[in-house]
View 1 (tube, helix red, strand yellow):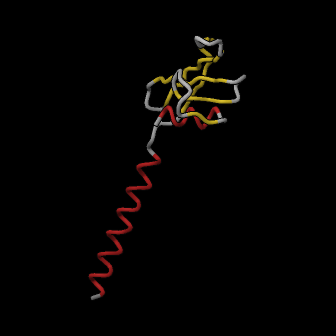
View 2: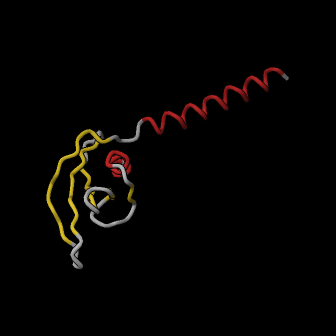
View 3: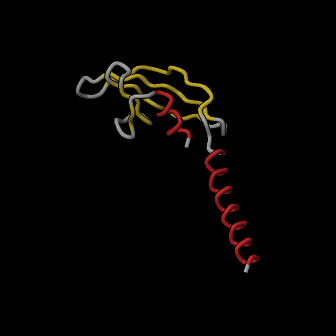
Length: 92
């Protein structure tokens, strides 16, 4: 009976360590640079930034409302009030 419990414990620990290590290998932002200024059809201004990620790819985020609202891409979707948090979402 102890062998079965030990095997289950080892299996559980292995699965949990694989799950946790998967989140550690997600791409992270390495550089954020201003790219340009944009304007919506109805007069809303926003700023576009390029985010370089640790996987070698580049993504775009945008700043709205005088850089109080940060969004992934050029649309006001998937937004937060934190630039770094938005850059991390863009790199996922």
